[in-house]
Length: 83
Image 1 (cartoon, rainbow, N blue to C red):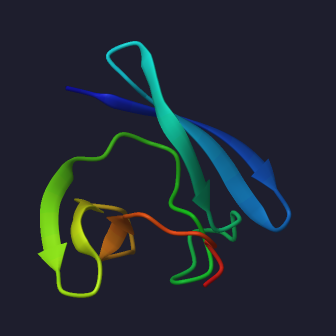
Image 2: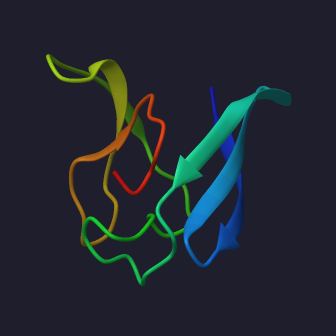
């Protein structure tokens, strides 16, 4: 299975549409693009492996693996990417 994220970049954030198997799955919000800086930037465009993960704080979610210069990038339910 391959997921596709179609992004629109804005100064204060990055909006996206998540697609899987040629079907729309939902909307995403991310931090703005700030040159891949830790904790203030969305990740660079590219293909990444996803791994299932669990934490007491977030429950079940996904971890984006092998992001250059970054670690512990998570996909999870949220209301505000800046928080």
